[in-house]
Image (cartoon, rainbow, N blue to C red; front, side, top):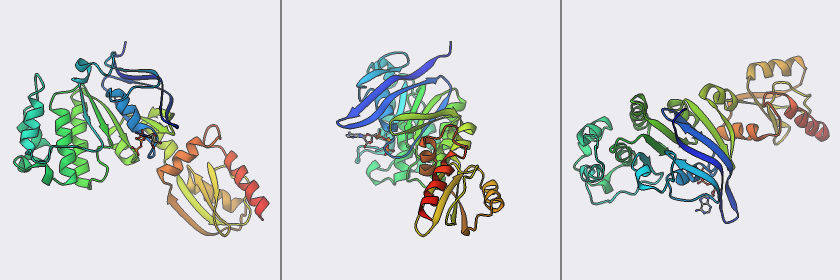
Length: 311
Ligand SMILES: Nc1ncnc2c1ncn2[C@@H]1O[C@H](COP(=O)(O)OP(=O)(O)OP(=O)(O)O)[C@@H](O)[C@H]1O
């Protein structure tokens, strides 16, 4: 049987009136890199905080290494970087890392870690004076120093420049190549693409899609074709149609070439054609639209009906 390192089973969690997680079930087997992808407020951080034993579910069960996430022996095998890194401002980079290393039975050599994360020159600096990127890298070093089996990263590179982001990703890939398991949250498709082999799309507290990177990529990578047109016929290649100002339509599609050909073939008298990459937020909306199978033209019928009523 596959060794499951982390699991949520039928988990629901509220904050007062807010339903942050709604009956979520997920398993993370050993050796996998799982990306939790979703817009702000989707429930990603709540999933993580339950896994780390920082919060309890209202119902359902969360397991870490098969046991209660609050058990100290389980938590010793997890390395995590919280979203907001709170470091003691007056301590030096090496002091903080040595201090945390001292709490683990078999820590990684701290000099090697500082080197790998591009922090060797900052080793003698107080953490209060570090840049955002340096703080994130130190935070990853702290997560790795105890040789965890599971690495939990909550939006690890938000706000970082490209170089800092790539360096951090590389270290996470190395961890995985050595057999490590990773759960990483992000609202960047790019980050999830760089790291994860399996992607779980979370939105409004629910799991929308759970599949391979390729599978999820094909469902969330959409184009927005924008045209001015009075009325639209049903269009097969439209996943979702959104009316805008002055007869403008935003048509979301998996295949913008095919959609434009379809518009021409249907002799739609469109003007001001624009094609752009749809945002992930738009893709999430398409995924939550009540059209089974996402790539069918049902949404276009709604759009056409709206257009017809308006013209
Ligand atoms: N302490 C809290 N009190 C009240 N509501 C909260 C609290 N923490 C989270 N929420 C709400 O629960 C929902 C899920 O939040 P959560 O932080 O888990 O989402 P997220 O996907 O991690 O978003 P982000 O990317 O913005 O961190 C949101 O509606 C959020 O506003």
